[in-house]
Length: 469
Image (cartoon, rainbow, N blue to C red; front, side, top):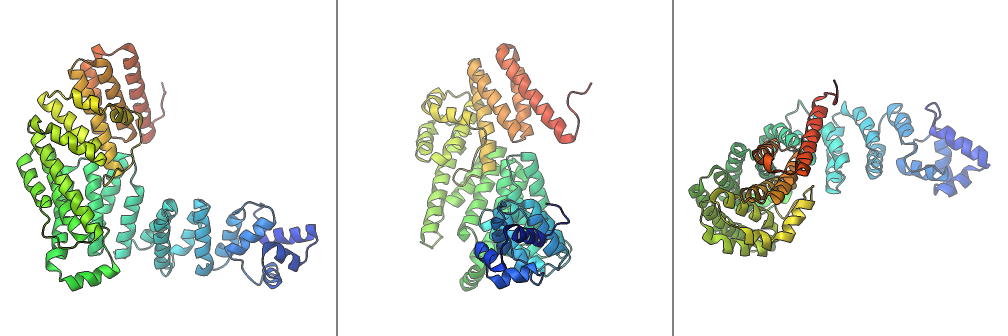
């Protein structure tokens, strides 16, 4: 549409062309004649619902006039929240994010819009309109950047969760950017934020960060559980309820700290943390949610006791551990990862186990983009997936089963490249080079192609043109 042409002139042309009265146009649009008359005479600014009705009468797709509507009703006129809010909703529904981007700067100078935009962002977030919600959170954070407010911190928390992706490099930057805002959050929100941060750093294997954040989460959880009177806790939770039962944050702190010990090879200390979340007999609540989480932690304690012994070379636990992961499918990937890791560390023969889970393992070979599994976030599962494929490759190459070994290794390299896991990419390259002389020409070609793709992605990221002389 010509920018000089207003929505009103489009309607006037239609009325003239179709020889309609205001009443007839109103009937077609489902509006009364007085409303149509006021709009066409310039005495009333249309709402977005009225605009959509008129657009349909003109035979245009919904949203056709939105850019012009912004110009006429929000740039050339003073924005009115009663019009802005429904318009934001309609833009979100139609995925017209550019229109939302154009509106928000018009509102930023007026701080009274900040809480209104925040409430709308929360509604979008709850409805799963993630991209639209992110735009609103960004605008609120920008408008309050000098306020040091709790709302600013909460916007940063939401943006952190919305920006997490398959890309480990981006996830690290998201976590580092959000971390300074955590202590500005409400005490209840801090617990959820710390748990999300710890899981993100866990997926990145940044164990120093996981340890520090898990300790802080445990400290805050203990204050809520043992130092805050129950009536005060109940009153607070009426206004701001944690995502999980309160004891979960303390138990999660112990579990995460146990994971840190496992990664560092300190299995004795890991066992102490495991005992801490195994014995939750002090939890008195008996509601369904509480019982669900108590059962989960009991199961994880059982599994991690097997793992702790396995990582010290005790293969007598393999049968019990396999029985556990077979019964708990959410634990299958991490279970197989632990088994192959121990096999490579202690030269164990786990052929029977790998054969038993052959169909599941082949499925892991086919799936490139992982999803969350149970309580394991998408980011944690993706990292475990790449590491598992590498472990199986290492196992078969050491056994002299080179065709299978290289197949798993190239899959690990491909998966690691997809999630930008530089540590795992380098490990894959080192392992391939160690056995390169035993790789078939086809495997060597696939390897070179993967490295070329990785190099092109890297050069694209840093802005270097590929293929220059």
